[in-house]
Length: 191
Image (cartoon, rainbow, N blue to C red):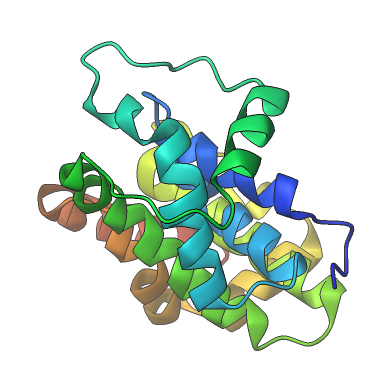
């Protein structure tokens, strides 16, 4: 049962965002939070990712000039609903491989967020992880010392090593050294 009003439709639209031809990795913790708030287990969320979202938007990852501006929510929902309960023989196995780093980060964040029973604290953790993910992939991330006090505290409780372990899977091998340095600088902003 959804706790924060998150629905399967919210899950579909949050997941579909990661198949756009633009940078969306800073939103992976948010997607994990949507899945947890919708009451999905990691296994159920993975089934939604593979069977209800990839068949709808997965081929965009294979396009040279794919959709980047965003999916129309109603369009995603209509098509994902058609995929529910169907067994797909996916003709593009490379899409799952391309999308797996994002999925691995969502899964790790889901696991961490689902360990927190208090919805308000879980939201703060998601916001902290999202702010840190922004530091990993954005050129001009918002400084952490400008985040709200609860988000700064959630970031401190999370710690550098756990944050790195949760967010690192979404980075390409060649991005990891710079990503680690960016994350260390983000934590240094907290003082």
